[in-house]
Image (cartoon, rainbow, N blue to C red; front, side, top):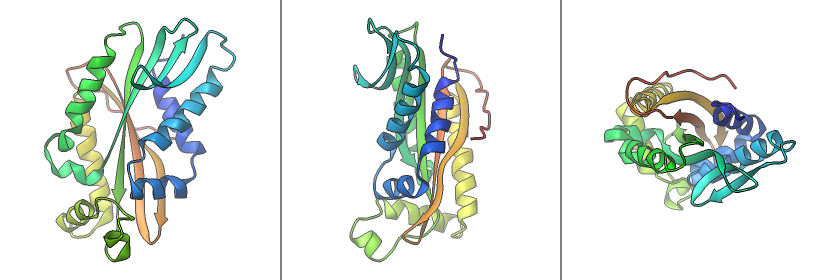
Length: 214
């Protein structure tokens, strides 16, 4: 029997095993969900290694991550999404909340499996200009710069504002664990933080938002 908070433990395990510089660079240069997903897969594989009837699978029936029995019965299903803290400037985090809700509804076709969503959000705390922007090294620089300008170029304020907005927006979907900080680093002169949250059904009502310490 797998614990309900196994996805949160796997996210913490991924954070502990990740190289912050690598995750930071990948998050600046594109969305980072696959890199984190793969570390979660490896952590889970180590946890279930002694359980002969279970295996961890990537992209199982279009689900990002699954733990299934030898007879292909799912016991844990996880979908992932990645965005940026500046997406909180738009309604419902730029539509990502609705997309995550749809993912969780889709997972309900397997009612006996534990379902969860992992949401990753990248906070860029330095304005992006020059070659890093013009050469496309750092993606979505315009959104980052607008978010910083809105908060007087104070990265501590934008980080806190993003975390608060994300917790509030996704909290309506179920039990919310996080944020788990996966990277807090500086890459090519750019400050970057990658946070993760785990959302577990049921739907409706106020979520039990709980801070998580790696």
